[in-house]
Length: 166
Image (cartoon, rainbow, N blue to C red):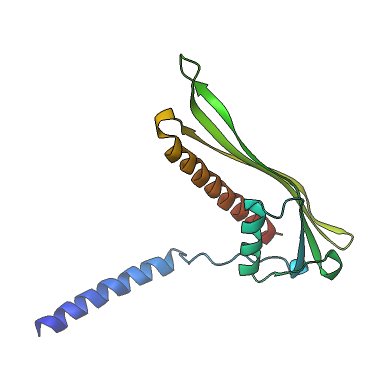
């Protein structure tokens, strides 16, 4: 008897939570819908080993885009015109030792389908900064790698959102 009352209370609470989430418009994030013109896409780039290129390929595949190896086989060409990443010194100590760095990643891209331009050339730059301590060189190098990976994830997400809005 006690178990059935607890079951009724728990199921009622779960039902209320479910109704609340449904009524507020909550829904799980799905893969972005890429324009039909990009169903067979060729990615033109000078650097096929960059983090952005590799991440973009994976996310386009997840979105249902078939990536082709030749521009003649494609229905659209995604051109990565610039793919640049580096770091800059933001601040130095009194002894002229770097204390803070900024990691940046810049991409410049466009999308064309036949003779039509789907997306005019766009430029995106994202930055992150981190403090530097010369006694923790290995840890700070790994931190920089992780920041760069996070920036690439954000860039790909922004590009896919832009493509899905077309």
